[in-house]
Image 1 (cartoon, rainbow, N blue to C red):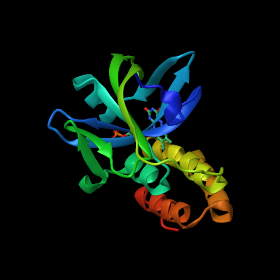
Image 2 (tube, rainbow, N blue to C red):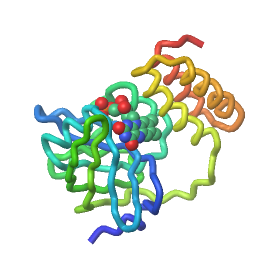
Image 3 (cartoon, protein in one colour):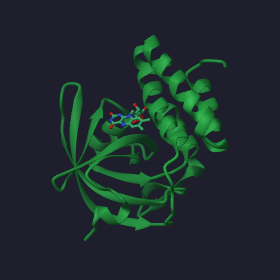
Image 4 (cartoon, protein in one colour):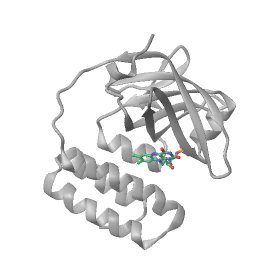
Length: 191
Ligand SMILES: Cc1cc2nc3c(=O)[nH]c(=O)nc-3n(C[C@H](O)[C@H](O)[C@H](O)COP(=O)(O)O)c2cc1C
């Protein structure tokens, strides 16, 4: 029996990276919010390869990741194949602090689908004391705006990314600064 609390997944929304497998056996990774509310676990997923894969094969892994570059890359482009390892044929991320494998039940919506998640397996690879870093959190916020910018091309998202970039410059370390350089490159903005 998997207790997601042991993995640091508590009430509210935890930002994780979902890995899924396509019909053709291609691994995919994308950041998603993992919701926990009154004992229920679910994700709210817009049309994406993640959703397509879950509709084909109702399984997903939530990878608990603390690497800002991985959030940026997996939200805006494909991860390199060497970033994955396979557990019983299913992709998980090599650098995850831990992962949880879920059976999924999908209630498909017009714009967004509700995916109910039942944990079936999991592994903790590393435990880490991690003080809050505003730079890391700012990369996550900027990545969310970047995924919206590539779809809607609205200037308000660029303004938000700029705002979060000032926080990264002030509070982030090398990993966060590298993630922002990559983010700008992937959305086609030269700084
Ligand atoms: C931190 C973070 C959280 C995200 N959470 C969600 C989410 O809960 N649902 C969703 O549909 N997209 C979410 N996204 C956007 C997807 O990751 C993004 O659209 C991605 O390109 C989908 O990739 P895919 O087509 O490979 O599945 C999130 C992005 C970030 C950076």
